[in-house]
Image (cartoon, rainbow, N blue to C red; front, top):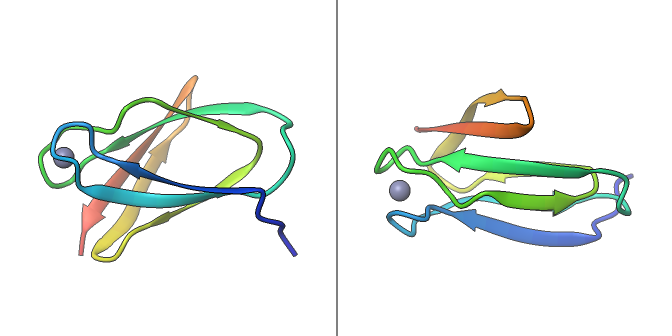
Length: 80
Ligand SMILES: [Zn+2]
């Protein structure tokens, strides 16, 4: 199964709430830039650069609503 090379968390740059966990599952093969929209305050996280393939997991009380892929992956979360 998947390795876990690195774990991290992303929080909102505006209200500091924890938004999601991520794990990097393989060695560096590509770099992704992601930004997470905050469902609490309408702000967003800082732009996060992740080296390698990764999986994201919203924290408790949040679910993944949509991911818009372009140069920057925009992750949109929703409160349950
Ligand atoms: Zn926020």
